[in-house]
Figure 1 (cartoon, helix red, strand yellow):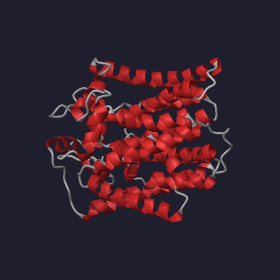
Figure 2: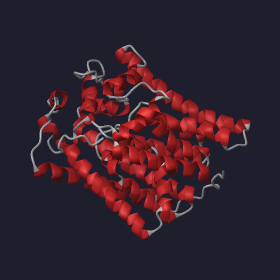
Figure 3: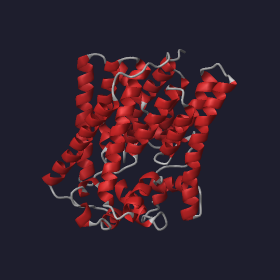
Figure 4: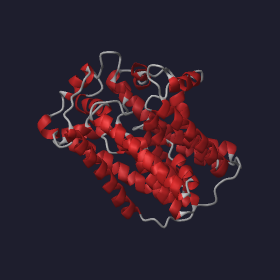
Length: 383
């Protein structure tokens, strides 16, 4: 195994990258509004109808087509809290970590239009995360062209549309990219703080702490200073997780309510034995997960490459989100959850140096993203 050489400074500047990334996000939002205007559609299940009825039609009408699926839960929790956020067949709003609901609640309390705030917060966070990620890719690989390819690949990825929705993905991207960048710069306190904030958006934020310990265990040498560096990152993650547990305990009386709630959303309690069920779900006769499963396999290969080429930290950051997902017995929403495996996009960008292969990948990814966008806007399942 080899480890990466010390990172050089990035030649790519943050603000131009941010501007381009934000322009891409705005284009996706506008495309969604155009798609919505092509035909009228309405929620078709009892839960979506109930949650959608809570949207203020006058305040939300310009961006209403982007409030679908999980965004309705986030709005509900932001306005009314976790208590009473229950669906008809066991779903519960506790499955949604508190960062985006807190942003929406703050907007509501301040008298702001929470629907616009949700859109702006998600898209600004995504654009900033894209910029940080691209600079990280250049520092990690030492190649500007690879970093730009990684930027394009991430934006074109089928589930990248969720960076434009008022989901948690934008925050997850931003804080994970900040944590990885800080780790590369040997700033463990900043890495831990960023990863801790990421834990308030997505459970996958915790993988940064585990990866830091993995780097100390597998990459060596196992010095006390190296262990302290890893433990600082672990502490940041632990603090973020503790805050999430505290919110659940304060609002629902059960610190583990969030973990328990996932069973109501079609996931099993985490278990190694569930890996077999996850693999079987790829060809499930009722709800096959071929796209998600295929991408999970691809990302596993890229994660192994990252480990071998750059060390355990980068490999684990890529592989652990896949393991978290598979441990629940399904690849449900896998293509969206794989957005947390950021180093995979860097590995893919380094591999795709052939122009034909690169642009074919970009084109196919963008086409799939369009179909998922169309499904999302018209109340279909998109991840």
